[in-house]
Image 1 (cartoon, rainbow, N blue to C red):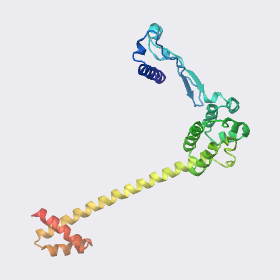
Image 2 (image 1 turned 180 degrees about the vertical axis):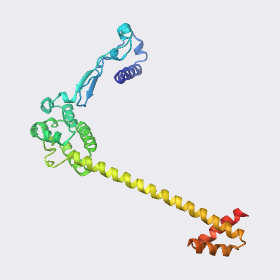
Image 3 (image 1 turned 120 degrees about the vertical axis):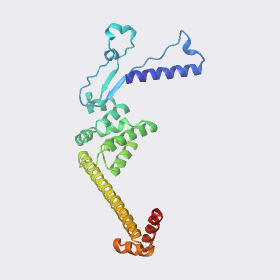
Image 4 (image 1 turned 180 degrees about the horizontal axis):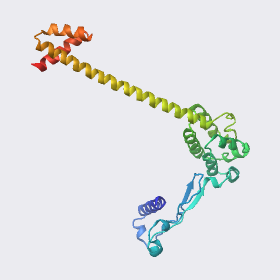
Length: 259
């Protein structure tokens, strides 16, 4: 359904563009929409089992088939291609697919075994704007794998310098899974610390509330006993260890409420 929606939006946009260029263009009998080849790019390692024909997702299509739109999409499954297959194609899309296969430390090892000169040759004539896109994709992958920022910048820099063959030349000891574990552990400790801070803040607020309640009770008792403001202030200072200024504010506040 998502692919069907994309196809409709493409055709709708095309129609609007043609009508913008020539008013009423889409109303002519000769008007035709452009063909669309739907392709689904799949990076999962498990076999793709979803239906490939739209009719298969519509109830009763075996009876009402001719009244229901239908199309078949082509599946491009990343793991149907070996690293050698992708490198042999020698184009930027295949290189991006090679990059997307870097999911674990062993994948980096396999990438490093590819011929450096052939990897470099892929980007030899790549336009700068496209090279920037490839570098961005690579950066996002490294961030997803929790590669340290300093190493990420170094690796992305090599892509921009068109040095794909030397991409992981100094990364023999790199352990993505260990970096991921450290990151998760750091996040866990941070959440734990934040939880303790919130708990402490809650206890402080609770203690503050109890203190204010006790101050109010003591102030009212002193007032009921006929003590003056000054005597009440001194009583609060002795009982609760508060300053003269604090006792003065408390007595004035509750004295007004009592009156």
